[in-house]
Length: 451
Image 1 (tube, rainbow, N blue to C red):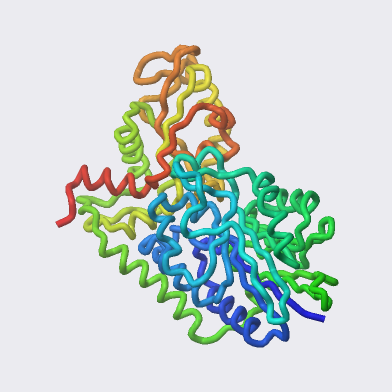
Image 2: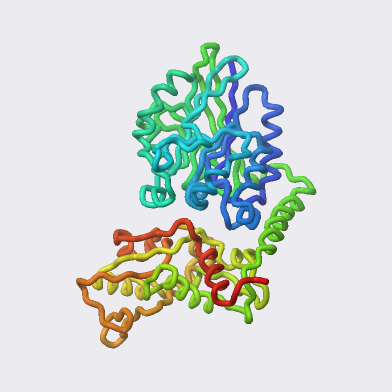
């Protein structure tokens, strides 16, 4: 009876607090397990909220991942959308593992990117062939704006799974697709194992769906996943089990904390060298919000703008303004966006904001690119509503229900549930520019370049 162990991580998001313990555990399993070990990451390993990731655009994270001895990884939306096209194209240049990504093509060639392949087949010492395919969440609205074309998940499996099944004894899907999709795919397709991610779910003892074992290890390195397979002499799977091991149960050594601090210090040092300008006075978060209204309006060439004050987390101190201070105050993965609304939709938007404002003021916002603490208060430029009459004014003129109006804002407001009117209106998202990069350009133009 052959034993195969699959180790997996997912959704680390550059949370390196547990990374030393995780790597130690992976190495121990790789060296000591009485059978074959394959190690995978299921995407969103990087997140530009960490200074080291921001400074190196993920390259330093790849060096850390090299040390974990992964066989293969797939990408998440933080790799695919948090980096621009050129940055993603070089992210894995020095990786010593395979990148498996079957459902994302490069435009305009409509071919798989040079750094990825749809699947790979790994062979155990006794000859069992383990076929592994990777897929990421197919964001149809945003990926094309970055020069990528996501492919339908089912069509991708229909294309590759027959040949992968023919070449393999065991088929594993690295799925940065989310738990609901994993369950559906397990019902529909002949897959032995699905290693999941994206929805940050933990499956403490795995989940069996129609004969497929699902494994998932949460987020931020708070768990490590283990899937065990037992196979007979004909390389057929006889038993499957899964577990997610809490990182707090992994052995800790005295130098771990120092190592984590060193990564943080390295990123801070690199970013602090990148001085953008000199601020004559400190800028409180509320003032940064007002500056962002001007920056969004100017960059998008749209007079009216809105932004939430929670986008600005820290005071920018007087004196040298570096990329580090900007990251600390604006750690989000959010992008300048132009919304086009009718006058009637503008009125609905302001009503939705007014209705939810008291709740959102201190709301502990999470996700959809947001990396701050609270949502805060929505502020506006050249857009207001008369409290007495209810009339909405755009650039000082009363809006007409049928006319179209443009609003400069951030894509974050489209993805959250508080303002449904924004879900279906036309948008133009500038995914190649994050909020802190926009503000760096704005402050440099306003106060002059650094000496």
